[in-house]
Every structure is written in C-alpha cells, then in structure tokens.
Length: 106
Image (cartoon, rainbow, N blue to C red; front, side, top):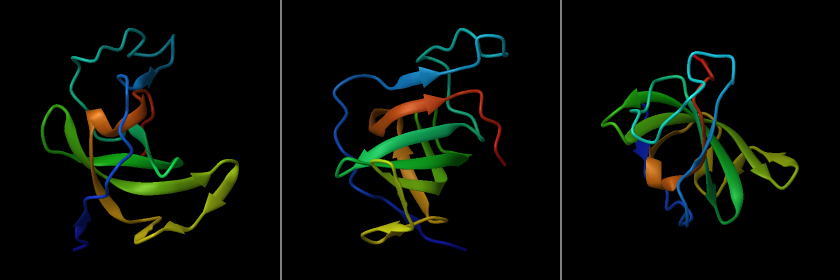
C-alpha cells in the first residue's frame, strides 16, 4: 500500500473554480456539495499545476487522490520534488485551484 503524501499546497485566495458540464447531472454545482470519488481536483505547488483524481473521500471537504498530471506552464513533468505521477496525496477543498465535478475517472 502506498503511503499518503501531504504536500504543502500553494495558498488559494478564493474558493476553487468549479467546472461542470452545463448539460450534465451537476449543472448547478455548489460549494456545499460534498466531494466525490472520480472528481478531478487541481492544486498548485510553487505555481505548478498538480491534477489529482479523488480516490478516497475522508470528509465532505478532504480527500485522498492520485496525481495524474504535473504541469509547468505548458510542459508536462514526471515529478516535482518528492511528488511523482501515481503518488497518493491528501488534498482539501481549500487547497484546490479548481474542481471538475463531472469527470468520472476511475
């Protein structure tokens, strides 16, 4: 079993941008809606975007997820410090830059 990493996410000044499909089941997303497995959260560390698929919901606003992408501007990276694609990380609603509520990734 992989250990769960707890990176120091960049501080977000505002609530996350919630992305949804206007024709989908979540066309009116709300910040009061609990996190769900399969959603795609994006946070930043040192200005680099880290995309995380939520895999285990701990509370309505905290989850664990698998890193699926690390993006430095327009360049994909395999790692950032001790974080790599495939690592499991803890992410909170307050750490998120954006949340795609209509992504149903495994």
